Amino acid sequence: MFAKPIIIAFAAAVIGVALNAPATLIQDRTSLPSFLLQATAHAEEALKAGMVDPKTGKKIKYWAAPMDPTYIRNEPGKSPMGMDLVPVYEEAGEEKDPSSTIRIDPVTQQNMGVRLGRVEKKSISKTIRTFGTITTDETGLYSVNVKFNGWIETLYVDFVGERVEKGQPLFDIYSPDLLTAQQEYLIALQQQKGLNGGSRKKDSRLLDASRTRLAYWDLTDEQIAHLEAAGEIQKTITIFSPASGVIIVKNALKGHYVKAGEHQYEIADLSTVWVDVDIYEYELPWVHQGMPAEMDLAYIPGKRYSGEVLFIYPYLDPKTRTARLRLSFPNPDDNLKPGMYANVYLKNTLPGERLVVPQEAVIDSGVRKRVFVSRGKGKFEPREVTLGVEGNDYTFEVIDGLEAGDEIVLSGQFMFDSESRLKEAIAKMLEVRSKGSGGDADQLDMDELNMDDMTMEDDDLDMEGLTMDSDGSGAAPAPDEETKP
Image 1 (cartoon, rainbow, N blue to C red):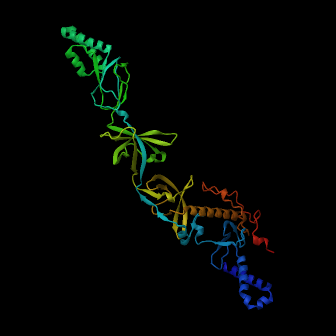
Image 2 (cartoon, rainbow, N blue to C red; image 1 turned 90 degrees about the horizontal axis):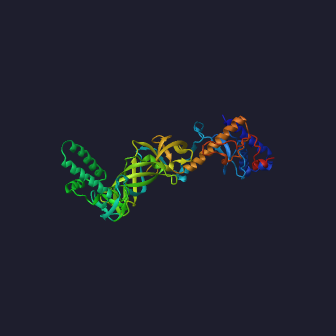
Image 3 (tube, helix red, strand yellow; image 1 turned 120 degrees about the vertical axis):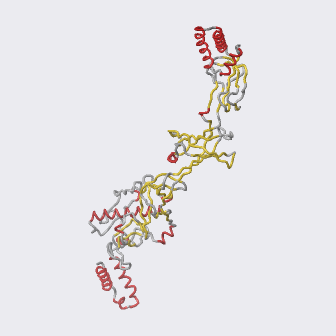
């Protein structure tokens, strides 16, 4: 189809050169090779876009500058740098591929150091390593106070940090109100013993009320029984520890006047401790309440403690943009002390198998994420993907865009992306030019192609800054055009 015009063009060029050549040149057989070279050059100049190159047998798509692929012409010539334009050929089946698909030969791939990998379907896990601070278990805090006014006469626990056991004496207190209550109880008890019949029943209610008053003031059953057995008022009453633990706050002093409700001691049960840790916002999908946690301490190397996630705070720290977790760890040996720093490890595995790709295969523009897929025979196609959570070893879960077994590019994809975008831009410009001139234009002016005008973030190319004038107006003429007669 295209052979006949090529032969005619070549023959016309040879005849034209022969007619214009001097007779001495024709007679000189040694100048025949140069004569043929001139004829061939004229034949090459006659080739235009859409014609078949007799050297390669391929259809010429357009002519481009070797140092500036955006400088495109429909015929041979010179680039603004003075270099000969080179033909760009159409590849077989190219019209069926998307305009963003690129071709790279194996030698170039090797020179670029391109590495390929496969999309795998496997379980994805994540280990979060963070640090935390050991604190007291707030559910194990106890406050010691009295419900009456008085004076502390004897102090049994007199410093912070001392360990106490449940029921251990803390201090003795003298209170006039407590003396009055004891006196009322003893009187009611004596009246109840000395009366019979209906009067005993009435005094029994008075006795119960007096006993209840003593119980509400935290006197133990043993103390009330001792009062009944002795039959005498006790000047001081002993206050006992309500729980086992460590004294963390002490306000009690010997001879100190105590008001009702004032805290004299605070006791912390350290058999279980809490650990407050901070994690990043993107790590929250991996954490849930009740999941296991591990912890180690710098002063006990080689030993790990096992606990669980007790609570996830429902808000983030506005300054650090981190979420806080509360972990719970048993502390039977009292090795975990409040205020210590600890290294915390949270490991979780998502249920089922997921599609997974390496992080290095993903090009993240901030708006869209793309992965280059190998289609064989040197073809590479960019695909937009939707990613899920990030797992261990810098891997991402793929929600949409890829399938298991797809061969993807792991390195050099940024150069692939540049080539793909450039090819897509040129294809759109050629399409606009074809629609605007009906494909009959002799010149395709792309001198004003400005890559800065392309909106790369949303993958849409802004064509407003591109000049598609078919007559080449507004563009600097090629050097060979300026010297043509």
